[in-house]
Structures are given as C-alpha cells and as structure tokens.
Length: 248
Image (spheres, rainbow, N blue to C red):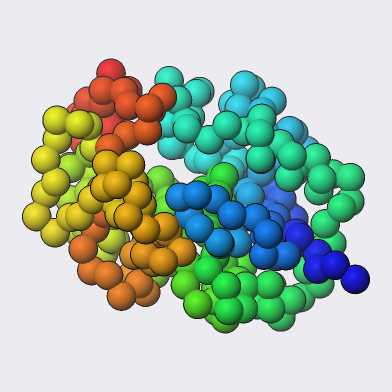
C-alpha cells in the first residue's frame, strides 16, 4: 500500500480569532520537493469552512494570518499563490482524502526523522503550540516564521520573528526572538545578520532543509537571516508612530 501523502493534524478554533481552521501536513510520502526549501514536510494552515483564495478576498484569512502587513486586506501583496498549492490541499482535505491524526503520538510520528516547515501557508500562531511541539519533537530539524511574535511568545523556541524593518528586528531581539528580516535592495545587512543562503541574491547556495538556520531559538544558528523582498512584495514600507511597518 502506498504511503499516505498528507495528514490532518488539527481541526478546531483558530488561536487568533476562534474561527474554524484546519492544518494539513503534506509530503509524507517523500515525493514533494520545493526548490528553495528542499525535501521537507509542508504544513498548510487554512480556514476549514472557506476556500483559501476566497478567504483572501473577504479578509477571513485573518484567522490564519493574523494582522500580517502582507495580507491583501492590509494593502500588502503576499507572495503565496493561494489558488495553487493551498487550494489543491484544501480541496483534498474537504473531499476526505487525508486521514486525521487520532492522537499526539500520531503527530509525533508524522514528523519523525523529517525536516518540517511550520506554516507553508498561514501563520503558526493560529495553531495551539502543543500541535507544533508534537510535530517537531521527533524531527531532525524545522523551520517556521510568525508575524504574530508580539502575541505568541511561546513560539520563540520554534519560529523566527518575521520582521519587516530594522526597527521591528531590534524590538523582536529585545523580546528574545531571533528574526528573519525582509529588506529592500538598498538596505544594508546589519551586524549579526546574514543573507539567506537559499535566496536568489545569495545564489541559492543551499536549501532550507540543508541550512536549518530558521528554527527559532532551538536552531544551532545564532545570527539572523535577511532576504530582499520577493518580487510582488517588494513594496516600500514606512514606520507608524508605534514603530510597526506599514505599506507606504
């Protein structure tokens, strides 16, 4: 019998707003490979009751993305094409093609001896931290990013704080986070930062599965990666009075 490609590891209320969400792990069969991330398990965090491309239009994606400035509802332009992989995975889940993990032990086994990406789509902060802790407990490594770092301190061990400015990076560092910062082409790499080696600007020297620097405070790396904004997200950002980056 061929190995199951996906597994539902959470179905319940969003930790951000209480709306129904579903979390699916894919790549369990070892066949899915992303050129940048490498051979890793992908996790998809989506509204359970609304297709992701529709949630994006109505603003209901806040249940899985929180107040991320890259959401279209916030005037941003997220680089994830939700009508592609996220929609395919969501439709498969709605058709019952993925089994549901019956216990935390089953979630642990799904991630065992694998590299896991927390939040291929959606913010890990939308999901109870215990789910992620189970998934990565037997993993060889993991990566994760959250824009909700001000609200989810329990994820600092697992995820990088997504910073959209040097000011935000400094604030996150002061709160005990490591950061993954998006910068403009003209911005310098700050002391304690390094260019993401899986990025185009670094010549795609490696992939995320091999680098493993973006595992929050549990990663061996101590320096903080930076990357030039993706094409459609390469917008100018300014700081509001409270130091939060907003679209210009």
